[in-house]
Structures are given as C-alpha cells and as structure tokens.
Amino acid sequence: MAAIKYINSIFGNWEKYECLDVRPNESRNIYPMPRVTNHFDYSEKELKKLKRQGFSSAIGKDIMSRIESLATLFSKKKPILLFDESPFYIAQAIWQHYQPTSNVFIYKGGFKALLKEANRVFKSKYHFVILYGETGVGKTDLLKNLQKKGEQILNLEELARHNGSVFGNLSNQNQPSQEAFIINLANILSDFDQDKLIFVESEKFSLGKNIIPLTLTESLENGFKVRLFLPKENRVERLVKEYAAVNDLKLKEGIEKLKFRIGKDTSSQLTRLLEQKNYVRVAEKLIEYFDSTESYQSIQAQDFDLTINNLEIDKATEELIKNLDNKKRLP
Image (cartoon, rainbow, N blue to C red):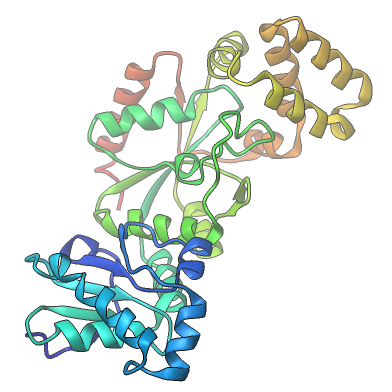
C-alpha cells in the first residue's frame, strides 16, 4: 500500500480523502476540525496512561481494540488521512496497523501546520469584486443572487454566523472559534477557480469574535470596488423585513451597547419604539446613526470602479455581470 507516510497539504484536496481526527477528545472539542466527521474516541488521561505503560499494558490493549473497530472505515475505497498532534502517538499506531492493507496517511505537523497552510491559501492571488454600501442597501441579497447565477461568492457573514454589527447575531447562533473560522475560510477559497471572479461584501476587520486574516484583508482592499445605492425609504423597508420581530431582546441589547455612542436619550427613545413594535421608526433612527459613523462616511470618500442601483435585485445582478463582462471579467 502507501509508501508515503505523511502529507503536508490538504486544502483543495479534502474530497480525495476520508479524514479521521485522532486527537484526544479535549483537543477536538476546543478546536474542532472542519469537514472531518470521523473521530477516534479517547481522552487526554488515557493518552498519558498509554504513554507511561505502553501498548502491551491493559490500556494499550484497550486502545488497540478500539483501533481495530475502525476496520469498516478503512475498508472504504478512499485513502484515509489521519489528523493528530505531534508526536502522533495514536496516528502512528493506526498507520502501522492499517498501512499494510489500506492507503493511509498522516497529516504532517498537526493542527498548527493546518493553520499555517490556511495562511498560505490567503496569500494566493484572487480576483475579488467587493460590494460596498450603507446599512440596508442589500449587499447580502445581491451576493446570494449572484450565487444563484453561478458566480463564485464568499459569504463572510454566513461563515462567521454574524452580520458584522452590534445587531449581527439576532438568531443567537454560536460563532465558530477563530481557528475553525480560518480553516473554513481557507477551505472555501481553495475550492475556488482563481482565474474567475469572487464576489464578497465589504466588511470591517472582524465579524463578532471572528477576525478576517490580515493577508486576506490586503487582497480584498485591492479588489474591484462596486458601490450599491438605494433610497433611504427602501433601506428602511429592507431592514424592517430582515430584523423586525426576529429577536427583540437581542435588538434591545444592541441598542444598549450603542448607548454611549448615540446618547442616553436616543437610546431610551429607540428602546421605547422597539417596545411599541414601531420597527420602521427604529430602523430610520438606526440608519441615521450608522450613516453618520466614520466607517460609513468613508464610503462617501472612496473611489469606486462601478456604482449600481440595487432597487431591483435581479436587474442589479444583470447590470453588474454585464459591466464585468464588458471589462472581460477583469484580469
């Protein structure tokens, strides 16, 4: 079978392997491995005991019995890739047991190496088209419509499970760890065709607790910049549709977080309007605030490669694609 024991590159090749996470349960729980559904069940305590007593001991025989129970997984046609922590104590045992009859490999370097490989992915050359626009202009809606048309899209908010503001997590989703966010992000990028455009929303450096890698931020800043605009009344309508009655408690918490920026009186007024279910007025007041902030004022000062009215999503999508086609889809 496999003469090569280690591999040091996985991004772009995940589908080629049946991946098996053989790290201790504690490590897997802290740093879950994206796209890896198979795991080997044992604890840090058992591993320490195994290292002291060896595989000839009672704990060693118990671990080997569990390794042998993986036979069904190793009977599959796909090669098996093991993820472990240095010095790969369990991975070595599994490799030695199954290597004579199965294609089995160990990912060299462990989880830290995986993060380093992810950062190399971020340094690759991509052709980004960045969608800019004020709150409620419909950037996410346009992005999803582009995906329906077969375009490559990078939805950072979906990946981080956060909409990138104090009201970014109304659905109370658990955000991924920073490590899982980085690996998932690299995984998506590595699957893209680098010769084609990738559409993405303009974001701040972070979405909730997830921080966008600096190397990727630099690449995004050099992308083709598209500004979307929409009349204020339509932005209010879109915000009400997106946020109204989804989670008023979270909305109230978001308003409380803004209190020191918008003032106590405005914060109290917004809270009263929210309690009265006057979502339109809440949206109007919030748009007034967001439009006055430095980050949104900077949109006014930027030079854009293209400006599009996003009142009708399908029409805006067609216009954007047509303009890019006329530019021969950029470099």
